[in-house]
Length: 166
Image (tube, rainbow, N blue to C red; front, top):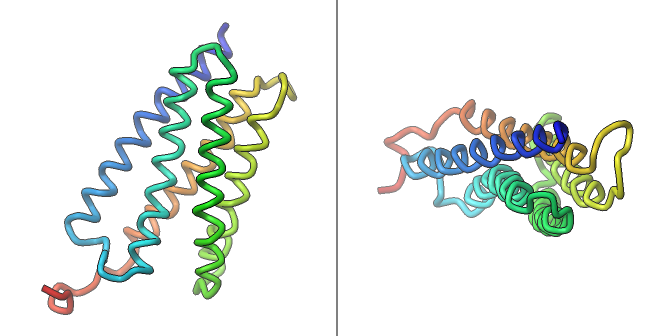
């Protein structure tokens, strides 16, 4: 009972924080840090948003699914597929990433989404962890990768106001 309750508490917290950061991310983009005019920047900013939307949705599904493992497993696999469908073309389209950090971050996303999908098929406890707990570690890594992207976006030098199109 304790492990299940801990997992549900984790997923409740994850969903709340994920959706809060997603909303704040869109607010920040709306007040001018997003550079929505460039198709490449637009795609990159939506790529970052998915790191909060998918973990939040998966966390919400695990809480709403209760003790029914099929409910959260289906949503986690669907979330992983969406993450893969978005992150693999994003990675391929950004082969010219400027630095080592960018390349590593680009490769991590599809790998983590693949792990999310695989962990949904873990039949029972492994290494003392329930399947929902294993998913928690992987989803937390996806969320942390999103925070890394968020930090990098805020660390960029903003475009000068005078050079922005009106």
